[in-house]
Structure formats: structure tokens, C-alpha cells
Length: 224
Image 1 (cartoon, rainbow, N blue to C red):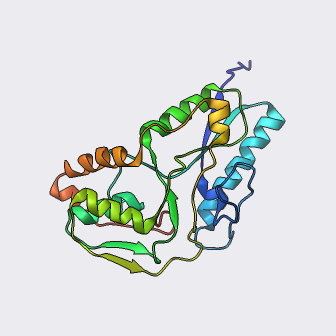
Image 2 (spheres, one colour):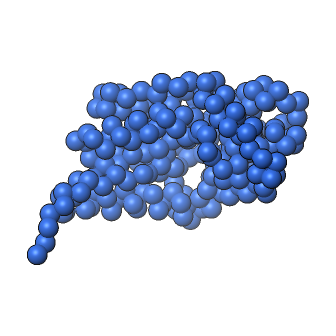
């Protein structure tokens, strides 16, 4: 005997489905610019395929689905060695190391505090909207300017060192959150200065052993 559970499935997708975008800011209608055989292709295309499967189950089987496209997110409890630019920069500053960025730092990112993300996820899950929705903070900043903010926040006098820009690294990231505003009544509430202070205070509380764990940055998360 089959029991109808009426489950609602929320899929956590990512802004990486847009690849190195030719449209700025990125709207949900933009199909993206992804190199399927490049070093980031496995991650990017896996997320795109996941969205395709989700829509197929929704259309074919009537499954209740929600798709969230998560842009750069940060906050307390991040791992210092997870490869993302924010914990990498703060970890280097706390260890007294020079900060390493990729390229000239002109590429942009948009950072959303975790509390705002969670609120957006909940609102989407409780909504009746089944198509993808961007959840992120549209306050765009270059990686170089972001590094300068981290140096100022941490009171560090370390240098900013430039490394070669990896292939297919996205030049721009800025979510168009019109749908989130109109459909979910959602906008981010925590500005970057406030969120960074909270996050930095968390990292400062870590032990020396945790701070000195080997940093690992892979091609899926470079300068994210």
C-alpha cells in the first residue's frame, strides 16, 4: 500500500550555475556561461543537472519542489580551511601571513550573512513558487577591496599578494533579488560590516591549533 507523504523538497543550488556570467546582475532567467569541460565544470554542471532533474520530477510526477540559488554566504562556524575567500583571508590575517588573492582582485563577489540566507531558505520553502530563486546580498565588492576591508577589520599590516587567476574564475557575482523581494518579501538585513565583525569575533575565539590547520583551496571555491 502506497502512502502519499506530500513531501516538499528544497534543492540547494548555487550561483555557480551562471558560470562566468555575460549578464550582470544575474537574474534567474539567465541560462549561464559555463565551460562544461573546464576545471570548474564538474561542480557547475552538477548543480545545473540537479536543477534539471528537480524540474523533471516536478513536471512529470507532481513533486513539490523548491530551488534556491545560493550566492556567497558567510558567518560564524565556517571552517578556516574550506577554501572560500573570507575564511582564507581572515585566517591568514590572524596567523600574521600575507593575504593571497587570485588575479588583480578586480573580480567581484556579493556576500550574504548566514542568518539572512536561512530566512530566505525558510520563506522559499514555505512559498508556493517552484522555479529557481536567487538568495544573496546584492552589495557587490571587488576581491581587492574586500581584502582591504579584512585587513582593516583585523588591524593587520600584512601585504596583499596576487597569484595567477585560475581558468574560468567568474569575473562578476551579483544576484538580482527582485523575485525574492516580490515573491518571498525577503531582503538581506545584515550589512557586510556588521556580519564581518560577528564572523571575525568567532574566528578570533578559535584555538591556535585550529587557526594553524593547513589551508586548502580548490578550484571549485577559489575566491568565492
